[in-house]
Length: 290
Length: 246
Image (cartoon, rainbow over all chains, first blue to last red; front, side, top):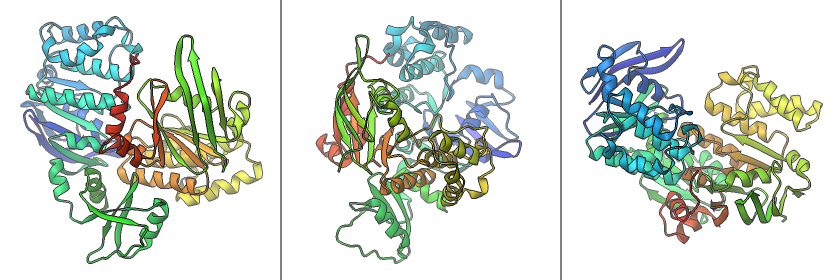
């Protein structure tokens, strides 16, 4: 449903995207995972025909993002990172407006948006600018869906949203996927990676790797240990100086440690050491260090 | 040891609405304390009171030994503050930002110059001394913003969602700065939406509908709520909320 071949994009002397290629299958929930400035938004804007790449090609639902942009825009839904609805229009006016410009009505596709829109419907007379963050997000998603797009592009939909609303949002994405909609979603949060079918890790405009979250974890090339002590910061400093240690990073209340080839870690009693399965975040760090 | 933050039934009402409802807790010197809650739970209102920016309706709070209701100016002088949204002036150079904040917090003129150099060397940013802040990568800005927030050696620094948006390595470098400051005895008070960020804290409080419904170390909270992750703990608690998000 989405095919990207060797896309490059620079802004003056800043390289935003470098030789990006990937493809997304129909009804796939595909995650673009990377920090601010990695190039996620540039890629979304190219795929939604709002920005021209310097070189490379991309098609979405079989349509070229440059040549077929008019047709493309009727088939895709896009929820930008920044709230871009009309703040001075009410909730229902915004939804009506987007339905109208896509030549449809709210009634026609109500079923699709019902699970989301019903949560904000009690506030339908309220101006969009007066909604809370979680409600704005639901309205923006409803507006992006009202014309029943085949592909949905969501740029950091959960940034600044609390854990309860985030969880709800990902459940909604699962439902939309079950409806056959292809979803490309970006996030800076590694813990959301496991909720996607496949993910691309992106940094400094380059794709580091693409795979299922399970494969990322399975392919982690080292044994990974967690280490804990009463004072992890001092333990961290100690492990940094240990010649057997290849890498050591803080992970919340724990430290994650990998050892050099044949390295052995002898630890004092107060240190708890245990082999663990890596997370996607461990994989990201490992790829960054390569 | 005397706590650095101590509240007793601290309350804030706006008309008939009780935004913060009798919260009592204390934070020790050098502790990294996470202050969590869903949107609208009352975190921001509580933090504004602790920073001396808003007067409590009832109850008592001591921050850095000063009464937040009666000695708000002394409170402000003894705390640092950093937010992801705003912390540094983009159109000022690195050293100008540092000098500005140091001056505002009353660091002596003679001490400022050498301390700017010392801080920048420690961060490995000496070569960026004359760079405009807007030209720095986000990760460097965050490190600089934190260093500026503790430049005047406050007893406590308040961090409002400090580490969003950076790559995993940069983020960990930032937390190492925080741990280092805590080792030096600076108390760290962090608000965040992100539970993986919360796991770096020594203790966490979770606000629901204006009250503190849970307060313990991440490990103990996970045990208490029989949850695998802090995310799960948070959701179990937040589900009890009756306030309508508005």
